[in-house]
Image (cartoon, rainbow, N blue to C red; front, side, top):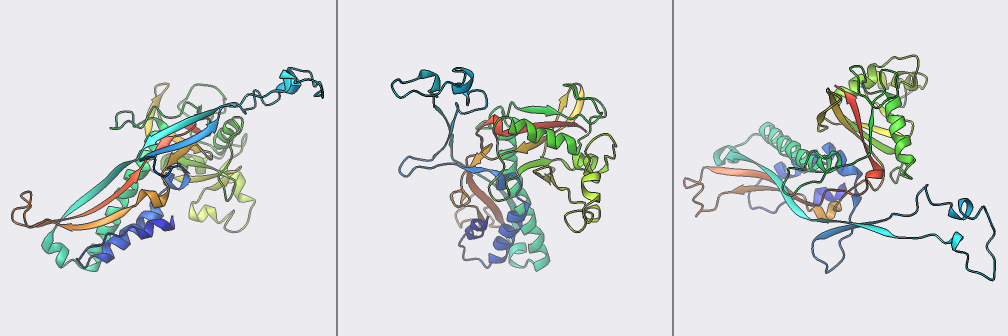
Length: 338
């Protein structure tokens, strides 16, 4: 994320403070943008991102030599077709587009703006900037952006419903609130598809709504794994101190983060949070350097007819992106009751 700091627009105005403050705040607030796989952008091949992954090496066919040939050894004299494994790849492509948001301000306010107001303006630009970027990625993940232009796609087809009421079924009930067990089961679903955690800590990521986070933290069932039980036996900031800070942290190999950018939908007549569980290579986007995030502070040009009295200025954030779902087997939508 350090690359984001480089995106400061050059401008003759003395507004460097606003731009740098906004970029630093943006870095802290990004959630989904931190868990993407960077797409390839081959030199001299335009502005289309590309991801490639194999479609043959899965649990279902990785042992053909054993299941089809009953473990027969390979012979020197013959080419044994039973021991031959097919290999093919799937290519995912996405066009890079430019996105952004701006806030209008009066020029005289910008000229005489106190630091406290610049702080608030910077935070607002950063908030809207991260909301745009993470919303595009979330929409690609859960399918809520089919009506966007361009469409973000139908989203992942890998789903799970909470078993908060104690019954592991395909129906979301009134008491199927999110639990720690749900997150661990979701991770198991992804692992069954050969999904892996992210580089660095090796963990997967769960991004859940703040309402679902409250349900998870207040679940005190004695019949299943709970956040309370996982935390209370561990001392220090990795354990019991979480009760005071409210941080969920890691659960069974999945790092949990809270975001109100998570949508809701109707499942089995219930209003449900569309929580997300991500593995490596589930979501894709440009690299941070390629996104070229920039904060501009602009005055209207002398000849601008949209501001004939030259009263207005804008503070704008824009970036390039190619948010896309790479592989449904590596991204799961976890529904829980609101």
